[in-house]
Image (tube, rainbow, N blue to C red; front, side, top):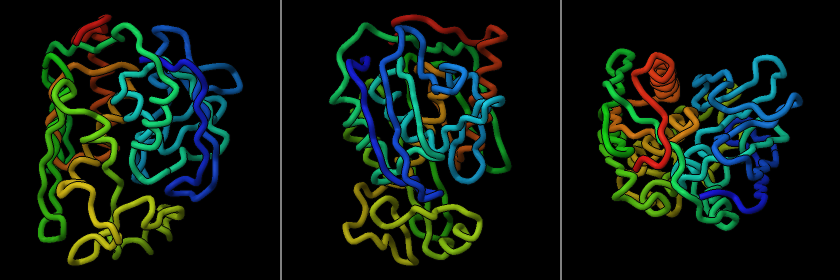
Length: 280
């Protein structure tokens, strides 16, 4: 798909709580997602990336122009296969909306039009990254498959696994609605670090000892695992194209997801992966 017109979404960010307007515009065919900076549009794959602070932050090293909280937006672009987009943000953080990618995806879908197949990154050899018990392994596959396991031990929601297949599972129904989450006993610690300042039960799932505190409960029994898959999809989209690979993720995080992006980028430069048009 491609944008046929502009899209704007306004609201506070999850961590900073500062209101900002996210503006998306059509970009030239084949350009991929790009961030508008004072010096012009810069492809997101060329920006400095950080997964610290429970979010993904992309920044231009010279101008300081940044896109914090990028993962839900990029997941929406990837999930809709809508890549040629220019991104402008007039504040420090992407609006949190309801804590998922669904509102952003629906806004994009309303302004999108069909287009020929886009670009795919075809992986030719396995790539793995790890940090203690956390591990991500990307293997060659015909299309994107995310196999995600989270494990919180005895703490609710415990251990969950979710598998998302781009060709089998509808993004808008199975992945986009999954919301970010946290634990009630860590809220004050997070806020003391300047995080979750814009968080509330309308844009995040908050777990107490016995389950979610949100009045409506969970959207899916395995919503935490689905949200981690959503985050992974968004972080992989930093590559600027769909990844044809099966990614098995155990205890993923933004930092580890971006370490996999770094390793995949090195493969692209070294010949262990290639970008092709119209590969499904």
